[in-house]
Image (cartoon, rainbow, N blue to C red; front, side):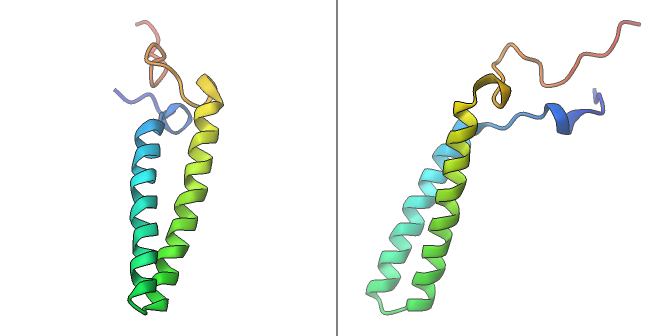
Length: 86
């Protein structure tokens, strides 16, 4: 059932996003190093830029996790307001 306020009450799996961000950061750093060693500066720069973007995203994710229930409600908080009684 849709309540119409989903954008306001939507939740994000921040811990999953964090670990996927770590995974992406590892691959971007490895790609930067591999392309730099292979003599491909364009690809190395692209992977380096991606690593910077992922790092900023990880910073924001950690910030949102530390904000607590305001940003990451617990399992006992419903994802939307229940409809009124009929």
